[in-house]
Image 1 (cartoon, chains in turn yellow, brown):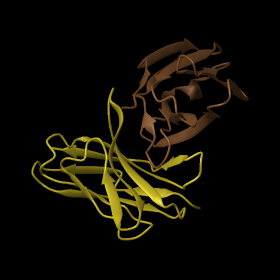
Image 2 (cartoon, rainbow over the protein chains, first blue to last red):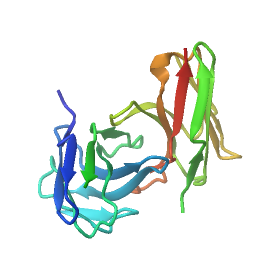
Image 3 (cartoon, chains in turn orange, red):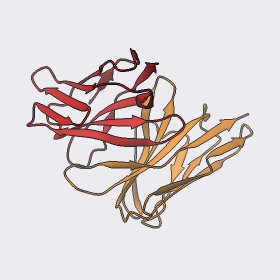
Length: 113
Length: 111
């Protein structure tokens, strides 16, 4: 079945360590996104990519990095520069149509100890 | 910049109607959306409305759009416990700009 797969679902890391969250899609979508969700804060856009080998910063890109070497994959690295990394991270993809519907993965919960 | 506002909490009794409200700022939005998020999961598109429509009905869901006031609402008829979730309003600024989401309204349904 087509969809978006995020891994791992739960991740624990020590402060100061970098961590990479995986996002893979087999929907043949051009655009992919990373959002961060905190209680009462809604979704905040970290990075997005509309085409392979290109990506743009979202509203809260500081302390994060991404790559888009393949259409199917858009990994997010949470670096030690991110001051408050504990959060629920959501990956999404979309196809370029007027509707622009986003398809989301199941999310990855990162806890920094 | 674009901004989407919605109240954070709503509590209703099972069988009653729920109305979740949203205001947005970008009058050029082509589509407006309602997404649903169940606990510990990603978001799923629940319904959407094209900007030239005033109302859209889909089974128990009714979406009302007031373009003059930039106000969007989602009504869920005969609310069930399975409707308990966070509901996000979102607007599409157009072009290649990503969707802008509100902070989400947590709907609690009391049996």
